[in-house]
Amino acid sequence: MAHRAARKPVTVRTRRLRLIALSGVISGALALLAAYPFQPALAFRQGDMPDFVVSCPFTHRLADDPIVHPGQPGASHLHDFYGNKSTNASSTYASMLAAGTTCARVGDTAGYWVPTVYQDGVVVVPLKATVYYRDMAPDPAAVHTFPADFRMVAGNHDATSPQRPLLVGWACRHALDGLKGRWTSDVPTCSANENLVFRVRFPDCWNGRDLDTPDHMSHVAYSKNGICPARFPVAVPRVSMTVAYASTGGPGVTLSSGSALTGHADFWNTWNQPALDHLVVTCLRAGIHCGFGTAARPQPAEPIDN
Picture 1 (tube, rainbow, N blue to C red):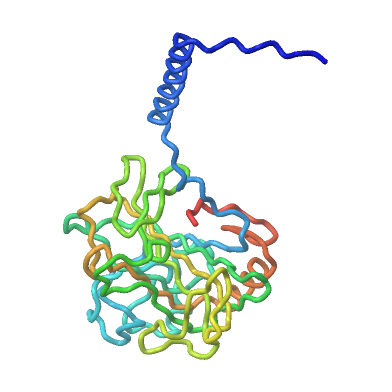
Picture 2: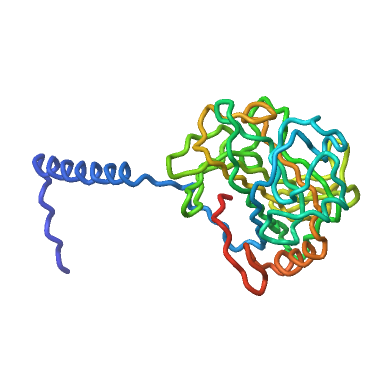
């Protein structure tokens, strides 16, 4: 049986040389990290979840809210409106259907609006809203379309403490590739090649009965892992509205509703209903990631931080 050669004892000098070498490796790694910092938040992308996406540039600004203050012009704080070009306090379902839209999908005559953003007291120019309709149900075929004239509000315009940033949050988005950092409750300070973005996610479960409720929230709820609560059994598309601004953010950002903590958004389903139903059936219920395109011709959407 062969005998292994006895190991030579490690001298103090050898140990020192090894420590010096290891120190050099660690220093080099730290230098690389400093030069190319890891950004985990930028790794999240839209993925292959069933969806369709709509790009809707800014259309107009009014102190109106036809969901919260219908028929009362000037009764609200300022809102920035996207999509439907006619949305105002006196709008009706019929008038919205008859109006034009800024949305790239011509059938999307829905109304979307958020509070106006200010930077040090000056109104910030909104660039556009990107609206994601996603199927969160474990069984994609279980999702239902929004009924005509459906309305809801998400977020708290009276908030004095941070809201859940994945539901109401701010981030920085690179202007060229659309990659975003993590959503936060506080407004981040973005770099020169980034735009400030604001997002509100709407509930994706409905009680199946009310088109609206007095508080504009009690008829809907958020799912948990795609499962709807028993009192809100109808799965509907999860609408996420992301608005980009010509701003790099920072501590001087406020909203027309108050501080940056008071973020919220309104959605009024005044789509051309057959067009909406078609997208829900052919994209969401079919389990297809349509993005900006269709089931027949999918078109990848902008990256999104989940």
